[in-house]
Image 1 (cartoon, rainbow, N blue to C red):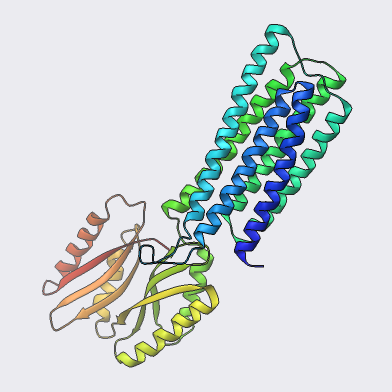
Image 2 (cartoon, rainbow, N blue to C red; image 1 turned 135 degrees about the horizontal axis):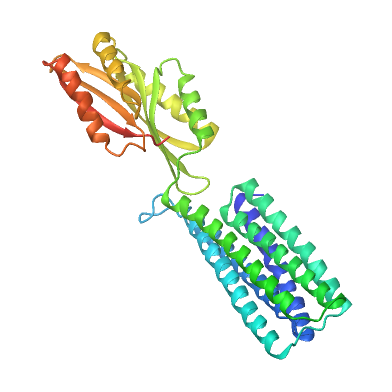
Length: 369
């Protein structure tokens, strides 16, 4: 089964299951006069809506690339998760609003729901079914790495908690007291938990939209794969851009001996790109640094000086153009450094005092990966 098929079939299962729960809970809630059960039914309706959103988002995200969007539509899955997060927030807010109204009404007329044993049994079964739905969604979401499925699964498990609270309130009302305020208070509490879940879904999905640091395991695996080739003497500046789950495009620099010929670099570059794509599905573009072998003294002085600056994480791309008396290298600066330009300026000043005949060109790199 393909990733798209898994997402769609799981979502259809969720839609069917939630529609059945909506019908049962709405009917019972109206019959026994329970605001909590009616709200629970409305919440299940939003779950069905979330699954519909997931299907639509998955279908659109799998559209073929075109001239306008040459990288495809994979990132729409992140927006789908964001939309589901908003749906969860609305559901939580509605639960709190209606519960407060019910609490106020119960204090005025001392009315309450009149539960039956059948109603308690159906609500109990609904709790179990929601746990099953949530577990299946999260399991399949992790298996195919779908944020939308995982978000819907989290929402379903929160709904199971809501349904369980409704069941507790119903049992208290049935066995102990007919007070309507019990389920109203529980509705407010659970509404807050639902809002919390919605915020967490939004944080995760919006973080993906903004652009996250690349997965460290993937970064290390790609680096190890590149350095398995003896011609690769260093690997730097890896940037991975995700255009959906199955499309990642990366760029990096590989350091090679300065005496390698162009056709040799071409061959090794192609071999590395093929290896990386076959193992990790990442399309890698490689730039080349020439490893400087003629000026070890200058390199040692640069390394000695940058050790005085803890915000400098790495130096690479070192090269000396003796014909034009130009020394170039890259510095990776920690994100916590507020003024990287000042740091580089100080380093250049120290180097220019040591080597006044040379010009120093320094590229500032961020600690992206």
